[in-house]
Image (cartoon, rainbow, N blue to C red; front, side, top):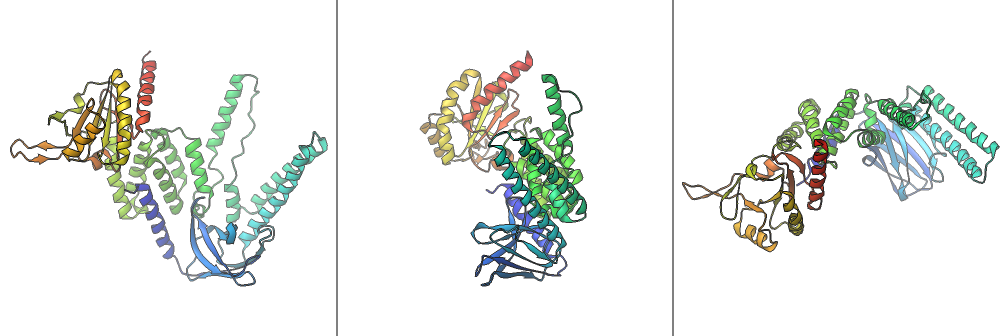
Length: 482
């Protein structure tokens, strides 16, 4: 079964493309000439995050390096890349839909000449100037490595100051251009000097805390989340990942709070949809235990709560996903699972006396389940001494397969259950447990760890990590009760 995030990505790109096709059809005409290539094909694509590109046109290159991107529909504005043979490419701003350029494979940036696009003239002049300054700095740093030289150190400081001044002046002079927004969005916030003396370890800790808080508070200052063109750059995705991976405490509440903070700024429709999608997909199947509550928050508030942003299919899928996941969040009481043991007796999970209960949900013919079964057997040898019970529930309702699995892997010591119940009146078999929709079993095995009150404290752990997790949880609880 495909993850919902994969389906949502496809729906997102498809819907987005359909919206672009609905734009006014004015067309585009971009002529290029690249010395050093001939008789080949080149591609024009816009960024969709830093690791995906959406191809919008292809063009054939003649014997002299000439090619022509053209179409009858207006291209969405943003940062594009022109992809050349042998992995070479360069970025280009698409705003004006008609312009030309010429460059050379010897140095695509330095040799670039633009005609008819003020955005790209400014964009490439910035890159050319910065490239020259980088080369100058590189040469000075190489000289400095040979030994202490006050004259070289002074030159380095001078180049650094001149470069900083150039950037500030360039940004000021091009503030109205998208090129200006683009370069600014790639820059980090500048942290002011700490206003107090740093004399002790406590002062140092306070300084670091000040720097972190300032950096986080001003993290989004340089990127305009009210401009849809930012979605077609690599910078928005990078900033989202940096903010939520490195600057946000990995708990559902903190993630949800920070998501709300970012989305209060992200008012442009395409940017808003992209931010919602990226955060939601990250926490649908999270790397950090227990953060899927952030996915539920995003789904309820920004998919179900803002249906005008999405097609009806996406909203419906989100409603279905929330209905499954919300009762299974960390801290929720484990839903009723109706099982009988090998003697046909009902297994009452809420009444199992244990400090912790491990629920192992499996398919007897699943290869991963068969790999996990010996590990489950081994783990139980030490878990049972810690007042931990294990319930193995088969989703396959074939008694022969179920009992064969138990016997093969010598699991008779644990509690084995199957969803087969005989109606006392008719004598017919009945099934009561919907493993897929009640316990989110879209692949097996699935493991839940429950506390003594049968509340979920972990899920989807590899069997190898279960004992360590329980030991860690027990120690935390003991330390808290001291």
